[in-house]
Image (cartoon, rainbow, N blue to C red; front, side, top):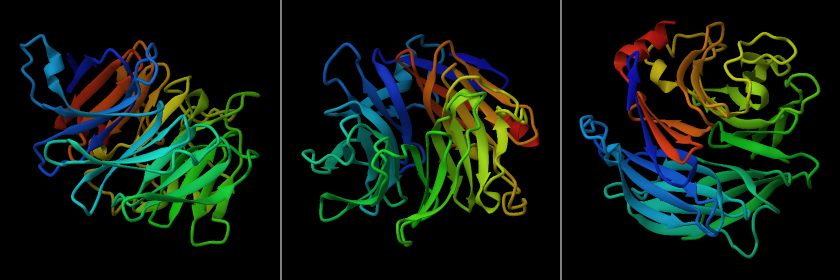
Amino acid sequence: MAGSGGLQYYRLPQYKSVDVVRWLRPLSAFDRFIAAAVHNPDVVSSAAIEIFSLNPKPNTENPDHDKLLNLRSSWPSPSRITSLRTSESSRKHLVVALSTFAGSVYFLYVDPVDASIDLELSVDEERPLHSGPVSAVDIQAGGYECVTVGEDGRVNLVSVCQATLESRVLHDSRGLVSYTAAKWGSQEEFATGGLGFGLQWWDRRKAGGLVSQFKGNWAQGSMTGLVHSIDIYPSRNHICVVGGSSGMVLAWDRRWQQQPIFLSGGGLTGTGQATSESDVWEVQYDIGTQTSGINSAPTSKIFPVMMCSEDGILAVVEQGEAPIELLAEDCAINSFDINPQHPSEVVCGIEWESIGILMRQRESLSLLTET
């Protein structure tokens, strides 16, 4: 365990690669469950989803910190997992939506009390959704529908229908445009991103789905930019925050489509402070710093954003402010997730076969809010 400046950090070895981590919402506010997509690069067919329970108050005098996490259940995946999202369902289950390198999508239904996996739904494995890996999947609140995108240029909608998953192709560019990230903005709208730092906004009620797009290469020099992650604040879905190549974190306000706001990195304009110079794998609005003033803030305000990167940085960036570094690992932080019920808690997927648990005290959150 390491701790400084109101932070406590636990690095927990897993002895397998940790690709993606997500919090699950249990019934009790006292329980904490984590879903992790893992694989062993030395073993064929070793990919799996593992569900852990977390003890938020471990015995720090006990050197065996692995007791902080307890494995509750696991599910073997037929292919390595590329993307992972979680939600709740009206069936009182927790839903894990995942996609694979083989082009398939699965829904797992997790018991909210003991974290056992009760049910698995999948699309027809003989007819994968994508010709190649699924780049990203995002599931709606309620757990009934998800969107999937791939580098093959397909945008699919997958929904639960009578104990099975049904899919339809919303758009197929036939490889002319590649998609690498997706995020729902409302029940009917979502954003995608891909090569060349292109961003698209979709409304499935409209013919063809595509409503607007931003085309622009914001990477340094002649490098080709790539969008890795998108987040959208629910009450302000006109603003997307994006993480991608070359340390780039920026916001796209659809009301001023050709004017991105750089939060980290600045491409040729140099307007953003470089928190990282490598790929930014994930971005999320830092809900832990948004305890007040949300409703009264201008609609153009960009709330603080947490990011993780290939060079091991976990940081909070905000428009016009110096970045706040939370972690500096010696390897990549592949993924992170902020606990929606306890936003002072952050789980990280560490490249060197570990899960990281960061706990921020209220005082440190106040400092973030005031900066």
